[in-house]
Length: 332
Ligand SMILES: *Cc1c(COP(=O)(O)O)cnc(C)c1O
Image (cartoon, rainbow, N blue to C red; front, side, top):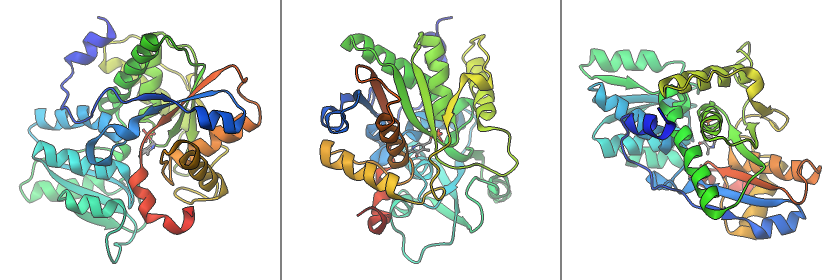
């Protein structure tokens, strides 16, 4: 069965405005004296100010509904884009939403926490964790109160959610064909892995042979398996769900881990310069945590001559811009 058929057979709850635009960043490219730079605007998926999690949630919310859930439970950092989009998706689908947020409860909601509250989510603050360590416990509590909870993992990154990025890659390949343009490399921020794993599966299925470079955003848990092997496992599970025979190995993933700065969510010169340069050349907003860092990495790689001047690099904008309002001091 061809991939588009396999995907179209999976239950999908429509949330995103698709296809997202594919644009060329001529001014940025000129100011860097670098390769042609294109951007896939998944900051414009539309739901709740956009972002990459909406594509995953189309499959996750459909699965929750199919299982008869009445509540979704998920987790993230305080300014989590995943939690913001999940809260909005739950509202659209008529589901309750419980968010397990890392950090101390803020005195007044700012940035995305304000939006989560507007969408009617309930908060559980966990000062020491942001990767959903307490998800099962909170889901149990909801169940014992009579709810039918559906747990969405941290970042929506499981084989159900990653299908959203297999479909996204199919969408991009279609746009490139239509424009008669080719790209040599794709650069994406990579954190919980569903985005990069889905893109790699979609590339395999659609015959895309360019480089796919994930920019690592956070170090991950101490003692965890290598990130590339997590990605391989996720990609293999996703391919299986789509009836593909492909299986993936660590070596199938390129992850650049040299841009972690002072840690997750900490804005340094790299992020600040990238956010300002893209705003001032293209009028496009990046976010402080993910796309600011990944674009900083791309700019650095261009300056180091990693891409030849006649090549084309695509930056996948994964969203996150509403968090900018919680980072005013660090960015300006
Ligand atoms: C979650 C997120 C990412 C990372 O995607 P993963 O699938 O978790 O690797 C990148 N950018 C933004 C803005 C995000 O919210």
